[in-house]
Image 1 (cartoon, rainbow, N blue to C red):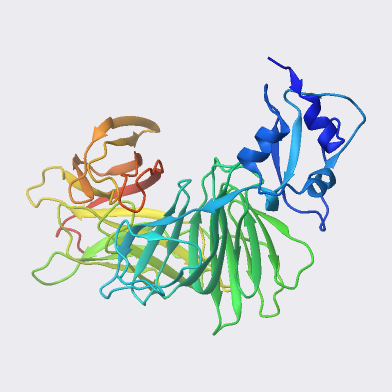
Image 2 (image 1 turned 90 degrees about the vertical axis):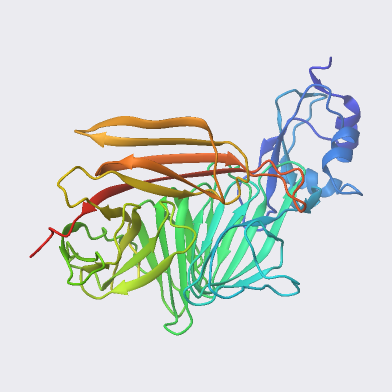
Length: 445
């Protein structure tokens, strides 16, 4: 077998050793390809490149030297725009809405598992939530009143992850971008006031036309962020955020506020077991946001509301835990880091409470689920559940017999093939943590 690229390739391109060219604003985006044994120009062109091959673009993308052979392992930079492309898609991963949600030109309303393609515009009604799953496992969550256009969603022949561009025209979007994406595969989100380029990270973006303001909040990784009128992007790292003013200028970077913490609960009068929980106030918080659901991954029937004071009403406590996500909002509109609680009912006979926690896996559809659940006691994690064969029923499963305490969990499963995605190999991965608190009617002032 040849240890270098055949002379035909070299002669056709008049090329030698390839080295990465310097970044320049006027240079096209490129994809790196590592030369393998047996590669020829005709094979590469037929497999990966659009026809006719743009030789000038390939030459421009590479710094060249006069040698006769290109060794195996050398890096070839190929302009992205000449690589073969195909359509990618997103799947509806979760949906919570009392009214049907439709996208333009769709004959049916959105449903779990429905396929969304490039060009789709999703407008989420008030009090509704939608989440999308991309082919590489990245997740896009759209809370109440968000409006988002999937401007670009396509794959090329050299990369496994799709190229993504999202345009947020109203509200907020939460993104968990798969960490395995190549650094050069574009994932961009725009608002009328800002532009963000990301790799594997978790972050949120907000835009309000009424307030003429925007926000970027980073929960993990790095997000390159600039206002629409800024000349340079700034890296925003974990735990930081930046407000965007109405002129499209990114303002000073801020530390995200911590979430309020649970302090105590008082039972309310009446036949239904309900409580008012006191939360630790955050001095710089303008208000607080509470998202609640009956599943630990906060999907399914999810609701959201704002608190002007650090007090939380917890209705109808049962043995099945109800889950709450708490965040603080700064004066500039940045939503802070998250804290998760689960509340369930304690028995009145003084015995230790044992509660159940529900988890959503709506796209499993008979597929085995890998699931792990740990409880931390005195700083040590105790593994309570570790299985690769868990099954969901009607898109959900429950873990029974949990005492109060701090929990962390992970789940993953391969999305089941469907009529729209018969060869799907998308892997869904989720993780989280919560503190389980048991409440009884004996919680009095």
